[in-house]
Image: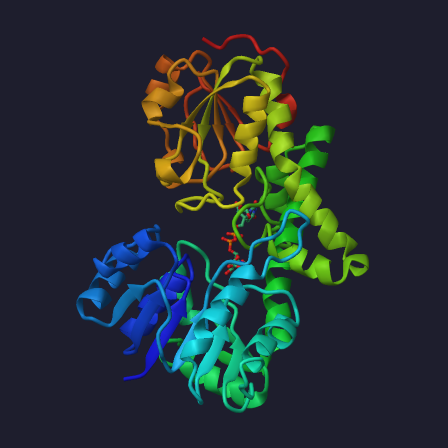
Length: 425
Ligand code: SAJ
């Protein structure tokens, strides 16, 4: 049985490890987070992802997946560690460097090393390969090296890991072939072999495409607000054109991909990327836009019930979430805040979390920042009876309110917000 050693048991490494174990590999997962390692060895997981808990439990019970804090000899090494941005928006490759150095003592001739972490163009050629070469290996001959970016959507990871097309970029042709064989064990989508730099850039282009398109939607929402136009209605109508797909405006763009990856392109070619840079700025400005509108309906010192902190609906991930920025801005302005977040756990966030009832009690506004399923249909009787002012501002356009006694705002009718609203009760 072939053995795979996966470095990094996060949102990508852990599901990937479980899928390889399911497909018949002997898998060892490596992470510096000892509690994640201990949990995994008990068949439990430290993140929320549909179907992952059951899969991990099964493959751990069957002794096909286990975890440890340092690498071991294997046939294939997969590096799936974070590549955050430094504050100056350049890629921090420290974790990739440490992971690569940590596997060096365990490398054997014929091993395949795959980096799944998102990396700036040329990182495999100019940064990872030299670390392995410095140990005396002929990369591409004795050790096969490739970049295979993950492209899965949180909430659908186990489906998309199997069905999505994979781009496998080798440092040379044979490396791409060897790495593609590895994924062939469970991927039913196409597995396309190319060069490492093409694979690196492909991943960045995909997420930049989405970020820039969301920025366009956000800008159109701001313009419509200024002109007194229902942006959401116009977007819906414009999208009836067969070749138009305007994305949805919201409180900003979060997550560890769209809010980060475009900077990896900007870093390498700043003069050539003004559009990408501006799109990032527009998306980063959305929390302020939300807060400016909150100020139109709630006096400073009023109570705002924030619904949702995670960067998108039905997941527990708060990384780069624009909701965190909105909360900080509101705090700075002196609002009382209560936060209802049914998916993230208290230890993941530095703000105290409340139940639905606690959050709305005597609140002047429900501010929806995430489209969790729990928010789609709210208890309107409770909202009306417990809130001081029954007003909902839904930045994700996900809530349905039927009661005429509850004032509802989304990005379609922001321009109707009046300063110092009269109490509605
Ligand atoms: N968002 C909007 N408006 C929209 C769509 C999304 O404001 O119309 C916001 C979301 O609320 C969220 C952010 O954008 O804050 C990102 O959400 P997402 O669902 O678009 O993307 P991610 O970051 O969860 O996953 C993306 C995916 N990339 C693409 O769709 C091109 C996924 O396939 C990648 O695997 C992932 O990035 C990654 O790991 O790079």
